[in-house]
Image (cartoon, rainbow, N blue to C red; front, side, top):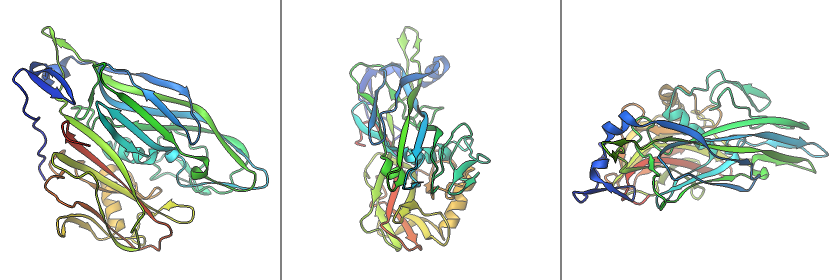
Length: 395
């Protein structure tokens, strides 16, 4: 459905409001900005890891225009085997990050997702970041498809790996936090050049009990360093005045977990935060099940028909089963995202920008429809909405 939020709200003739900040109207000049700006990248935060179950909080510099944040963990996983056992759950390694929360210009939690969701979004938005041929440990073996990993990363141990032996395992993990929706036109980038703003990235780290199943008196310890790099663009001065691109939009990536009512068979989950002025760009999800929860692989044996709905029963897209949706996702992303971590996605912008985005103001009672064939134990659906909305609209 065509987007309806590309025009900024009416402003006085002399000023424009960009993300809550008032600037001279003539300062908004995308052509001059892109001709003169300079890309910058540097570490905003570099400190020892706060520890499992704790939080790292980075207050970012209030300068330039922020497009991307890069988070890197570099450290060591120490496993000590005594009389018990240690096994990795499927939260390891990428859900080491329980939640990344980004706040800017009065908009709280523009981004609020777990680490694995960030890895999926990076693959979905940039098919050039393919994981094909990158080998990582998995269960008792290894995988070269669907890991969402880069060759420069090291998991140390694999998700689902049982009976982990005593040892020190090198861990190198990377996550990309997409502040802007597009790094070329900077849609959704943040105007940082004011001391009055709040610009914070908080990283909640998961607990050892969530990442590992530990019995007896075995122990797990994770130590290391966290680096947060900012990718920003300078604000050039042209003809004696500063110029900026059109920053009238915010970009949002928010995760929701649903446990109540999830069951074998048909499930219709109403999406939160619907409203006028919002465009849904991408909707992706996992179903977690089991005594030690793991994501369901995206197969026809686990999933029946998959789609999205609005209104009484309008269903614009309905895939016959999970395998069909998985194949379409792989075709779009160049990655078999449903293989290891069980991601399935309804994609609205990969093919042609905003043409196919869903107008959340004109699709009342918007819902994710998923039919689950597999038997479930303590199931949870974790879904993420990626949206764009006008700066004057609530997140």
